[in-house]
Image 1: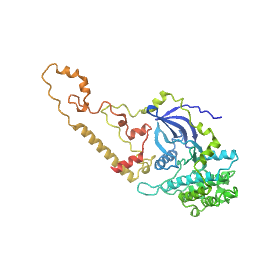
Image 2: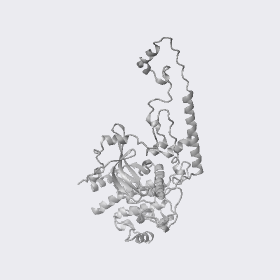
Image 3: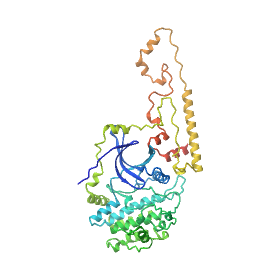
Length: 473
């Protein structure tokens, strides 16, 4: 029986939150729709920081870090981040909505049905994740300097198997960028899931992208065998197993696993990073050969999902019948803020807010900026001021033809007022009889929202595109 969803729509900026589909220690996740004109609707996942965490500088910084890294990632095997901002002080991310099941749900369903995962499907899922990690680990800034992005939470719950057959890596919320990192385990701070954590992270040693490959090796071993690898009765047992337990090849528990796949798994699980698979691309290339050997084809994963979940896959597509036209119309309109105030046609545009204009070069919490970011910000202000001055000067100095001297006839004025069709047929700015206006009476609404205004209203902003545009000038 397909479970029915009770929809209680909630307006959140320009989104309508439909139902909460998940929650963690840092944020809650909603299925949401963004309504538009002429019945346009698009479904998103909105991730909103928990109210209890919004007052914590560490959690807010972690959330902003996810936005920074998510804005840089553009790969078919990584969930796409489309929007970042805040509504009434609540930070949020809007991401693509994926129809499918995460790998954790897939593995649980296989266990319940006492079915093994097809070897080819397991290899395909791992290959897709390895490709995404290869891309993220090799990411550079605009000058070509490596960012050293490390996911730090590669686990079944963060791997989505899409109904159409794709695989997506989720949640870069605790990803680390800009250099190798040391985990503060001595203070009891773990970021990630213990049973998938690499030995170097457990031992507070520097780590890099190879740590993610160890985690992927654990995931692949568990998909193939249908068992947990390192998880013990207690956290201490789990950590001890990850550091010391002898790892049997998957074929020891499942003979049909080919030797080539055994070798890939065991190399990824080498405890010494120098002996481990060096990068995601090499792991993906090895898995590609296994896919050819096992004769994987594109329908295998979608078929498996349909066999395991059936109508449940379709049930995640909520009917939007309870979204009233009034609510959709209200959410289609741009939300107002108390600070924006009314504006007239002649009022100046709101100042550009550059506080998030260079996210990669600024500390979003303390306001500290790197010298380069500060120079870019000052240059942006100067350019904006110059452009504004030029536009204002042009408006003031615009040549206007002097109106012809009216003939000395007493009835002339009433004749002009009585002939509106002739005046309307001529553009107001070019008509000699029209009064000079500082701005059109019907200024397009899109021009009233500069980037600072958009952030205040919870609307979309691409700070990296803004920064690049300033540098291009």
